[in-house]
Length: 139
Image (cartoon, rainbow, N blue to C red; front, side):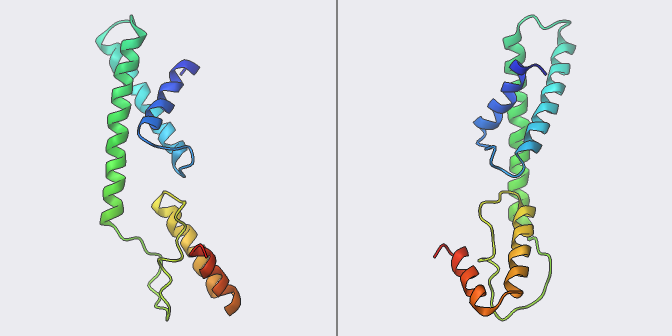
């Protein structure tokens, strides 16, 4: 892909509200690039040569947008349907909702960060545990 054509990938991601700050942004760029390549091949099957670059870009833009929207919908559905847990240990205090990194976007990143914070909580003295809870609650 030329530099001119890669901008359409980033344009589609921006139009969908997918920020470079997301944990899985690089995955979306890769998927969009693959979708673009497939769209390019499909476009060339209909025509022998790219006569109008604008037609190709419009065709590829719509194809990438629809496929990535489908992916986002599937992710959202999975997020609502599945409950991710790493262990079933019971604790006297339920800090499960507190021990979540809300800046992470991927469900597995939530789990990984939450697991680390729970480990940290259980291996700290009481004063440090209170500080951790206060810090996570933005106090």
